[in-house]
Length: 214
Image (cartoon, rainbow, N blue to C red; front, side):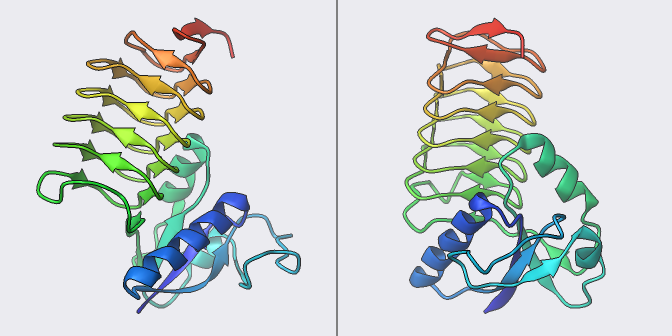
């Protein structure tokens, strides 16, 4: 088994720890050694996961052995900042994919550092970049193209031929109809239905989704 640590010691980090446990039930791949976090006051005494705090990002960049890292934070801008600050050549960024995720091995293009939780579906000819989070039961339709640092909360539905750029946040149960384009840095509210193209740094909510100020 390879050593792996989780960057992000909050609730989502604990969920990722449980996801890695689930992956290991199918095939023992990972030995989880602990958590890194820039919060020096992390305390696991009350935690449901029995692991120690390993240090901050500076400690990670000084780590002297080979180590896989998964960045477990739920905000796109933090995904981008943290992953770009990790410059240690000993560090690799695997994809963590639940064993029950449905996808076609022949034409799913997957970058690095992605988290794909239980119940997700990728239908056909899907392209995914780096450091995206697909939480529980996210579905992605045919010919979709997804960039980097996007967060898809549970039950998000992305239809076919949708193009999504970088650092977008999709709320619980949100959806995008087919053939639409989503730019950079947008926030899509919970249960919102997107029926039009979206540019950059906008906030949409409602059914159908309409633009509002943040």
